[in-house]
Length: 391
Image (tube, rainbow, N blue to C red; front, side, top):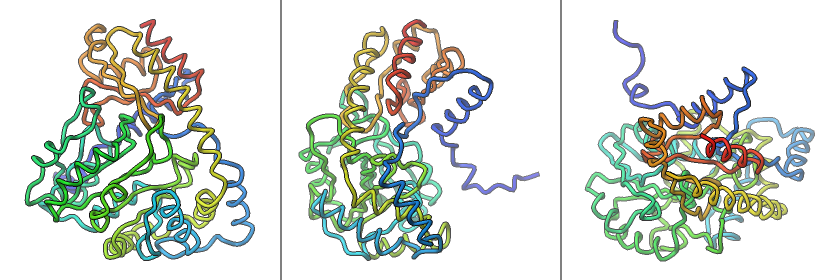
């Protein structure tokens, strides 16, 4: 008997990060204390002014449908944010709100990709990029990088990956899972390659824009390469910077015709993002931004401790992260020392034997690595490192 499932869905892998979280929750339900180093969400509460805005929205009756692409107030706040933070000008017809950054990427893939199109994705990559390209019947083309090149692609690698079928390039800086951040000069060099290939559009995933762990300023390709602005779609949201992962508000900016097509896709899937969460997002973008600095300072302290502690363990090579809240060490030496098969086996060992939740690098297209999230308490980080060192 043939399967009722579509060929499309059978090509897609379940989210590895979600799988780790689910397994960790199973162990917790059994009364086992699991140290959470896998989750990609801040452990801070959503700031009180944002919570109040949501409560006020409920009490004020903002509980009905909104425009598919977001309220006028939220779209105005998004435009203001781009001008204030990035010196990029967008009209209301060039921005839209979605149910998280993931839906922004999904909408874009559905709106512009056809069978045979190629999507260029640098690895290590966020786990959902390749599968969402596949769901749009496109072909992921992976550019491999590693610790020795700071997990950043070179212009030569980009040039050699572009074909007549290339349609979309994914750039994510600061990066999930590596914490790598492209400098303005590095982006400008990539931009020179892209100027020679006008068929290639770019999605700039800026979701970790405000979480920088050093002195570098944030820059995306629309800022560094103004000539490419009309071929760039920017993905951002409130989840990471304002500890609002569960509120599910992402947003996009880009050429009006593409945003209009993305709105059409959204109109036939989720329709508008939650009205109450939109009101909260307006306050997040327009309100006091001091919370971000406080949170990032905590992330920097955790990062520095984790970096030193991991590098003290024989068999682990951990680079300094420049942004986001992840460390992405090479652990092949430790895998070999423990007599394990690969990074997936190592992550399973850590979860089942040491009760530490990690995500294997293979999920991000980087075998031999693992992702540690330091968006958790210092006590959890210390306990995880101690368990791992004792192993």
